[in-house]
Image 1: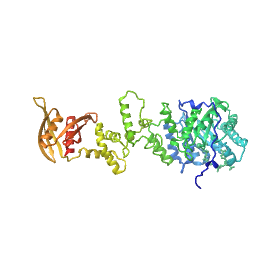
Image 2 (image 1 turned 180 degrees about the vertical axis):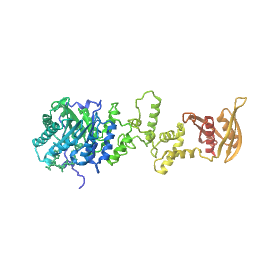
Image 3 (image 1 turned 45 degrees about the vertical axis):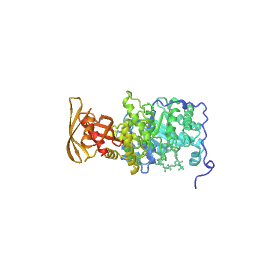
Length: 556
Ligand SMILES: CC(=O)SCCNC(=O)CCNC(=O)[C@H](O)C(C)(C)COP(=O)(O)OP(=O)(O)OC[C@H]1O[C@@H](n2cnc3c(N)ncnc32)[C@H](O)[C@@H]1OP(=O)(O)O
Ligand SMILES: CC(C)C(=O)C(=O)O
Ligand SMILES: [Mg+2]
């Protein structure tokens, strides 16, 4: 079967929510929510090979390091792997005092009892109960009406209450998810949650968590926000309720839905690092947190070594992270295209020049350094690149800051090589073509061996030195108004090379006592053509002599 010409015959649009006085569109996210990682449960249940104890353990330690304070550690009734891992965390005292673990269970007595047993001895824990409430699940999965579905939730809540009384040494907290909330009638979800609340009797000091899952994302994110705002308005005893958001990404808008849900009154966010999870994944906690960070809001999670975090997550999940994944992908701080490179290079120069830390950087919404990424990969060069690209690479790699006009000259060489090779040009490719273009490789046609500069009584400069011509050393000298013109005079008088210097610049390449300098000369030869020369030396005057010889080598 192929795509239908009339998809409306098969698929129905999700109806809008009637909430004309919705408030969320005018709100902003101004503080971090409570974060719950469900990597070890919702993420884990979606893996090809679920994590064993070693991987779960590594992931748990990673989450502690990131600063996650609520961690869903598994589904104890799923089997021994989860049960033993969870009870091991408790028995081995691995749960810090400021961290609370959570477990998930269906609303079935035996599964709930197993869940409590796994947590025996914990100082505190959240037991998370769920059952699906939406029309399709009621009809297709359970074959039950609304009252029967509500009864499943009530029965489960009663078992939670009784088990909590049995294991009285633990500070038990409860979470209830009307699973498939986003495709259910909000009024009905509220009715079921209110019935659960009647059993569990939450208080403002000991609130219940109502987690509102977009189990399968079926609508635009504004609809989820409407549903969350409506739920928050209708649920009784709002001050005894924590509204938790749990979005999936079937339409690719799981993060957007979560963010709009926060604006609509969500207090807490459930998700996975880098968005692992069923089908297209859970809400990506890293992206939501860093989106906040780029708005100046402290997310209270630490992603300062994001590559190390990604490495552990990839190892545990045995799934790669896409190179264009927000904030973490290998390529997300890299620009290949000329106009982006130009803007970024100017952006970095402007940041260096100004006296405040406010990030004003074209094309980079976040400073990669904040996440432990280097600036090295910010600009990479291929056939789509421009002057800013190779100039950046030469500056980062060799410490050379080419004058603008020289960049234009060198650009044709780089472009030709990129077109010829049909691949990215690495720093060593660019350096090799630079050395070749400006005759920096030895042996050179004209090669400086040694020189001395002195001042004549009439104020002119005298250059006296040894220059090898194709390997044969010659003593030469010449006069001029300055060192450069005396070298130009020497070349003319000794070798018949005619050069007129149009422009000159120099800069220090590295700081410190072993600093080197680079000098650039723009010359015109006897035929009227422009020739550029480059000199690099520990001594800036010698660098300028080398630059003139480099131009002469370009003529020869
Ligand atoms: C949206 C989510 O992510 S929900 C979480 C999903 N995660 C998992 O399922 C991972 C762990 N699960 C498991 O290991 C297994 O499913 C177990 C061990 C929990 C249960 O396994 P089984 O007893 O073999 O049954 P299974 O999961 O297929 O359950 C199906 C039965 O439970 C019922 N059921 C499903 N969900 C629930 C629920 N939340 N509450 C009560 N009953 C439920 C179904 O209607 C079905 O009943 P039926 O047999 O009368 O038709
Ligand atoms: C169990 C619930 C919270 C869930 O994972 C979902 O509905 O996506
Ligand atoms: Mg889920």
